[in-house]
Image (cartoon, rainbow, N blue to C red; front, side, top):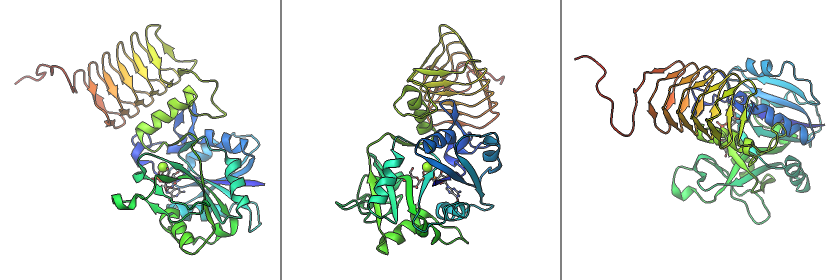
Length: 366
Ligand code: GDD
Ligand code: MG
């Protein structure tokens, strides 16, 4: 039986306020929670049992899957105190069903949208009789990731998590957050304390001469951990640049059947419009996620942004690369700049924020 562990215990701080009440893997991406896309991919790869390594808002995972009845069994390994990525893997291993010391266990970070063929990673691992096999990808700027140089045979030479100096950036090859561990190697991770697989386990295995191999591919790959990556990942699933068994044929937008979109509005770039949302006349929504019960008034423009559920955007407001928390209100004619993240329940009055053009006349009495 092929088994897998998904690491889903992180707090998702870079995605706040979206992650204030919802763990990152349960956020909606192209019409389904992200973890459901991962589960579908695991099922397609022949995985029959998956353990979720949970911690932050752990109960919500069991809630999400309480009615799940497909050909894949789910177990929950809850950490009262987060154990770090290595500690989480070790803790989740308690719940694996297999007993063979050589069994290959698939491990996924819970925030990676990837086109990698999981069966191919498993085959790569078996063919090299590896202790650990890491899926590797190449990125233009590797500083936010784990650097993994390999030799000609694909053997990992070192592992350096989040390099701090330019001299440390020795490769553009990074850890793509998908591993196969030999079961006995996984069981050797300390069980009683916080362990980082990136800072501790991988460097130690490599230094100790372990058979650690990289499987480099140029498949679609994105870590959805930041707001911009999150909206781009969702849009890529809708437009077909990235694929998931849960998403239909490529489309310009995914509009929930209960949403209302005015005939003069333009919803493009792989945007998602959630249940009961109302999109007004001449509105533009491009490469964005608009949540359930959101209203967007006439001629507003939303680009590469997330508007979380139960919020409203006033007429002629302009948003680019913005996250609007749930139950917020952005009044008319605001212009919200890139990287702004509005907390849940915030209210911005009409003409409250502008970046360009003439600022409004003073609204207060002196
Ligand atoms: N259960 C549990 N417990 N899960 C955890 C914990 C913990 O203490 N800490 C982190 N996680 C989970 C997160 O939920 C996420 O799914 C995964 O582990 C990775 O954590 P991130 O916080 O997303 O790490 P990152 O993106 O900065 O870096 C990681 O991913 C990169 C690829 O995107 C590292 O693995 C890098 O080496 C890698 O390049
Ligand atoms: Mg991440």
